[in-house]
Picture 1 (spheres, rainbow, N blue to C red):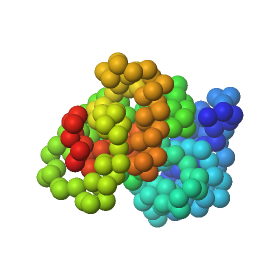
Picture 2: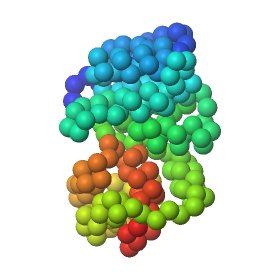
Picture 3: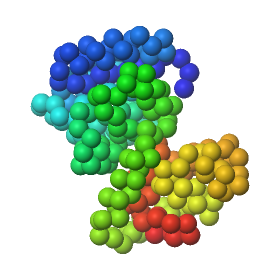
Length: 228
């Protein structure tokens, strides 16, 4: 992404919104275009202002941040929507998994150091997922505990449309590995890995790597060579 990254701040606490605004506007490559005090307002503001990123709290009145995220990202194919970075006080598994399943591209805590929050905004704006190794392990563990479900015909069709190399890349993405780590494991360049990830995003109609991780486990892709 080039140019200024525009940000909408959604939080029910005025002081929190003010703090985030000061922090974001301190960065020369970021700009706040609006604020919202609840989820419903966040949805309307996101549609009106079309920001690049929504900083989304979870626990808000009128409509919570999870439902707001789903509504913001529920769009017609081909139209542009923001990426959502959830910023929450609570780091429990239920909130993390619900945020990712709602379509959020990342999850950070409100006590994250300022520079790390700004970098998180940039990472998500660039189309990457903000999934720490610890978060990925917890996500994998959550799917491992869930009863196995047979893949639907639609899911099998999606998997069958992947090449063997795309399938292998998806497995590594699901394990939380970086492009460099995937390239080293598959003996290909980072540029080649990026190309495969781009094709996976297109074929699986996924917004980013966070959604690829969720989809890969929901489709039953859990180890190299397995096709759901």
